[in-house]
Length: 291
Ligand code: PXG
Image (tube, rainbow, N blue to C red; front, side):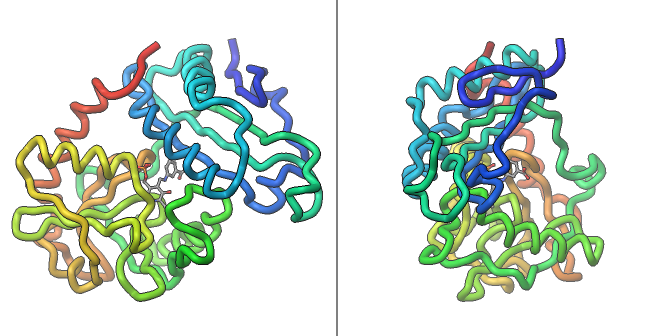
């Protein structure tokens, strides 16, 4: 049987999935989303993704129109009917359908789409050799504009611009600074530095999304007795770090070995990075509901 897509309460054939041309997600980026991974028929940290989705929606006053429990079950059911062994689940929710900015003119409840895909963000060799990264000139907006803690559709126009900056110079990723010039995160990943055998990562107050892979790495570090703290990070901290890596659902955990033409540490994936990648891999076998 072909792939099915959950759309507003129904599982339909992928070719038959239809959205209105006046959907607020399409017209204005007025919506929220989650990208979730499946490992060995386990939906990795699904509960955390549902919690973040509902927090994002609440912050934008979007009424998802179903309970988090029902949403959870809909994600599991979509993965189950598509027989996903390992892969990627995209959950998108928009405010609804209606032409015009004013949400009081919307003539439908929120649009909910759940689909499954295969996804690999970077080529395999980059996981082994490490990523070359640049600092983007495109900044993360301050929370008084588009709050970067909200995983909104619209915020990604900036991140896409930053990613294009990386593409233009053949780099694998771009680091983004906040308006004060401190390091926030990469375009779809959080940043960790290894300094003096401990980890530091920017706090969400500096423009980092509260990443679920980031939280997992913090737990792995605690298990392994590796100190980890949130810190305000400058480019100097990155250039002079012993090791660095990026974390995200799509990217998983990937070493960052060069930044703006400077080697980080030896310029190769570091020992602590490798240890944490292994610890992360182990967790993907146990965390999350199975079907
Ligand atoms: N920062 C940003 C801006 C992100 O978009 C992360 C950090 C990492 O968060 P998680 O919870 O995934 O560890 C993200 C997540 C995609 C895609 O389609 C992007 C993300 C996740 C899944 C898919 O490129 N970014």
